[in-house]
Length: 74
Image (tube, rainbow, N blue to C red; front, side, top):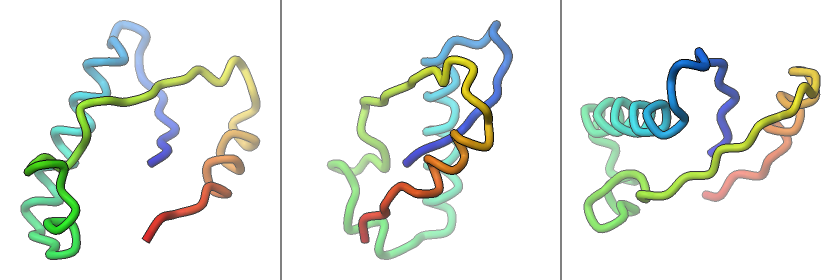
């Protein structure tokens, strides 16, 4: 999953990621999607790891284009 997130510099990346994972997990579980339930990580929706990178001043349009061009796995 690729996300383009603008957040305040006072928030640490780990707090941001944990919040995104927690909220999205609760929302997805509330919807009770059967396809998702089959692919859980030992009962967890998300793996415990993550990668965060900086875009170093690249134009948002270029970053958005990169994200939109990523392939999806079904």
